[in-house]
Length: 209
Image 1: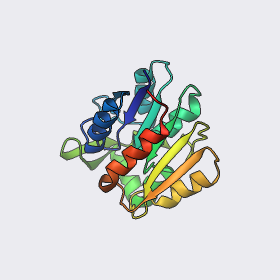
Image 2: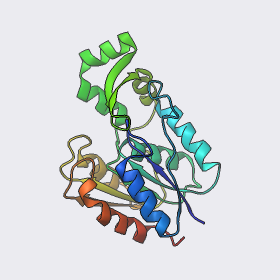
Image 3: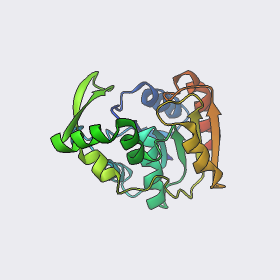
């Protein structure tokens, strides 16, 4: 049976609306879908490297298809670029340029304060409360490339009204790679109003279970 790993977004969880939707929809279609907790219970200590390690453990060296949302999409691309056994990749509003965009959005003063104190207060959507986030996320994230070299078949959905990760990031990524198909949706960053349309596209894109 074809295995799918769904990778949730930043400050989210395996119980997110998109994660539950795709797990239920693709399970009905005959796929084996797993949704690992990318923070592994330690949101304050979250790093890109740590999340990639979580994906490595979940994949267990087997061929998998990855579906990733936002930061999960960026992680899916990073993993696929390093693991040729990855079968296919579906990215939803992937957070390309992750560390660079954090610096741009926060500004130099806020980044310096984050570094000085070691932690930043952010709202965790999965837990519904404000949580501490360690500076290690940014420091570690700067080790990784903005645009991973994904060679597998890749399908991207991105909202034209996305004000978190501008659609131009996905347009730039797709324009340079013949293996990538970009679908631009009339939506924002969460893409919640086009779930069924995306699921139809994902089922058509994936090999039969």
